[in-house]
Each structure stands twice: as structure tokens, then as C-alpha cells.
Image: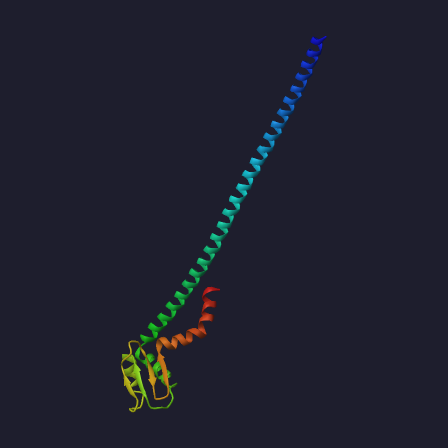
Length: 181
């Protein structure tokens, strides 16, 4: 009888051990499943963060690139406009004598009827000496064509570069529309 009781206790213990082992295996399997999901979730999170970081870097690069292109394009447009006015200045300075005299005479017509002196480019000075009163002193002291009229109360700059600069402010918006639209 004691043997039967011990055998029954032994069998009952084995059953409970089997149940505990099965539960342990289920728990381990569940932990492995949970851990695997947690790792996959963490990896996905890290992957998403890396993707978002790269996407942001690409977006920032594109914006910077667009800004650089815009500045570079504007710089090229400005250089082209400067070239146009520089070429215009050269063409006016190199006009034939009759056309250049006519151009200088036209600028001279805008001077006030005052006494003063004129600083001019060499070619301009030669022309002006034939058009202005002897009371107005003409000096060939400028490095560029055109002239600067000076009196006691006024100074007027008719150098070709300055005349074109004044025109540039008025004409450039229209020129830009024609060239770049």
C-alpha cells in the first residue's frame, strides 16, 4: 500500500513536472516570439529613422542646390547685362567721328548755361573744344570718353559709362524680360 501511494505520488509528480515543462516551453516560445517581434520592431524603427534622416538630407541638398542654381543663374543674367552695357559703351566710344560728334553735342545740349570747366576723355575733349564757349575750360583728363561739367554750384557727369548706368536702371527690367522670358 505504501508502495502504491508512493507510486501514485511519483506519477502525480511526473504529471505536474510534465505540465510545468510544457508551460515552460510555451512561455519560452512566447518570449522568443515577443523578443523576435521586439527586435524586428526596433530594427524597423531604426530603419525608418535612417530613411527619414536620409530623406531630410536629400531634401536639404535639393533646396541648397536650387538656391545655388538660382543665385548662379541670376549671376549669369547680371553678367550678361553688364556685358551688354560694356559692349554698348565700347560701341559708343568707337563711333565714327560724325556720329560721335552728334552724340557729344546731344549730351552737351543738356548742360545749364553756366560758366565752369569740363573734364573729358581725349576724343571727347577734342570735340568739345569746338562746341563750347572759350570761357569754359576743357581738359582731357578722364580715362574714358564722355565728360564731367563742373561749376561753382553744380557737377554733372556725362561720362558714357554713367549715362549708360542711368539708362540701365530704366531699361534693364525690360531688357531682362526680353532676354529671359
